[in-house]
Length: 294
Image (cartoon, rainbow, N blue to C red; front, side, top):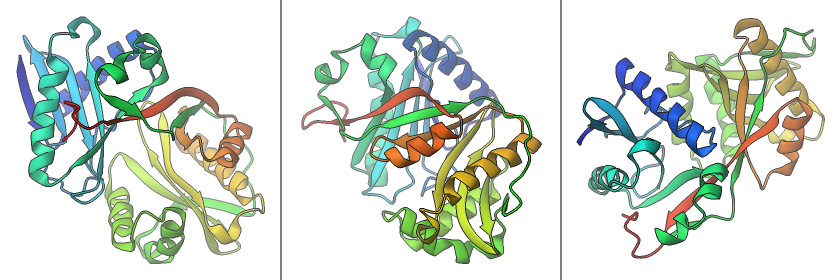
């Protein structure tokens, strides 16, 4: 077995990764795709992808989503082809990834997994000294939309560079764990990306909300929020509806997004807009002494 590590996936590596993930999801009954870009990582030179090959075929993949500074939390996904499990591939991949994280100054990780996998391997977490966090996430999906009549009072357009400063206070209020410098870096990275875009909603000449859209076989909505002072007026539902209208006119793709179980109000809004729960995503953290720790 050969392990390669890279900060960015080539087009060939991305295609191989997508083929591997399709096989994993078919076997596990899972649906959450790991993020195959490092654009939001703090250190763009740090290897974020670890690929295991056997006879030139990709059989395992680790991804590191490190959008917090060293010392912060890193989201990890680890996928091994169902035909190549129980051969130590996952352990070897993680050893390579963990060495990079330690060298970069990271000491906290959480492994993303799904309800389907845990249902088929109920002893997995306990056997590996991993504990499931109390908070989890629903991944929702809505079918491709037909263009609909736009809301005349709400406009949705791509974020302009000059609007970032005006958006920052609302962004930091919506995500209090993020400071202004980190928020600006995140928005600027999203703005300069070739495969995703930031959208803002306007109402009566003011920015009322934001949503990033990752383009692909489906459009993944992330970072969606309504500014606090505009909540409770039905504008969140209208912003989402208008965003869906905009994407229906320009993209015509299925839509996906994630919502935490601690946010039932948002879940209600999304379900009312036509989204349904596709899978449940859990986060596993290493217990003291676990071989999956740092």
